[in-house]
Image (cartoon, rainbow, N blue to C red; front, top):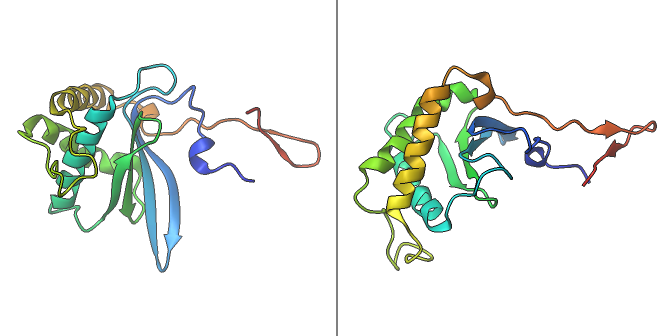
Amino acid sequence: MDLIPSFSVDHTLIVPGIFVSRVDTVGSGTVTTYDIRLKRPNREPVIDVAAMHSLEHIIATFLRNDPDWKDEIIYWGPMGCLTGFYLILKGCRPSREIYSLLLNAFKSVHEAVDVPGATAVNCGYCLMHNLNMAKWYASEFVNYLVANADKPEIFEYPKAERLVTDDGRNFYDS
């Protein structure tokens, strides 16, 4: 089986940032999946589950209401490893082109007075939210993005090097 694109990234080298994970043709259009990485995998504690849930709700609401972007948004949701989020947009833009959108989305968390849709009617587990911790993580990421905006490593994935056997097969060490 081929290794899926998100597993071909060297997670020992990745830093927080905004990365193009994959570009797919869907019908007559293109969609791009972005890796919005808040934590260094396997080197930092992951995002608290309740805070992650709150970030999901607040930022999804922000993105789907942004007048310039709402028609481009397909999906916003957490990574299973709890180190970041996936954003899927129509079209294909370099990571740098969505920097301002994401900076503003994470800044919006600080302004939230409650978590949108955090009721039993609207949410699958409405008791699992933590707005204060969501604000802390969002602030940490905003500060990081601002401090590192000129560094290419927050926009370019490090790729895992895979050995190729003499007969052309890929060798995976795990």
